[in-house]
Length: 81
Image (cartoon, rainbow, N blue to C red):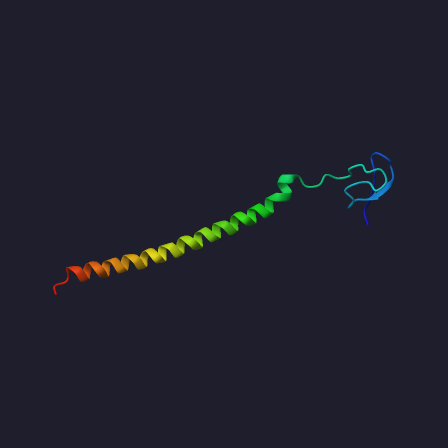
């Protein structure tokens, strides 16, 4: 266990404490709002990018299918009966 002293009241506290249990003084700064929220937003951005890429791939497959259908129709119309 690592110990330290509170700068305000001088009592011994554990270094893992964020606040002094005796006087409430902040012992160590926690992560800022940007640091605390960065990872969840990065994960969300990655999930959205993956969804968009998958959706674009699906749309390209549908487009390829439509193009082949149009080609078949055009060849069918232009072919002699």
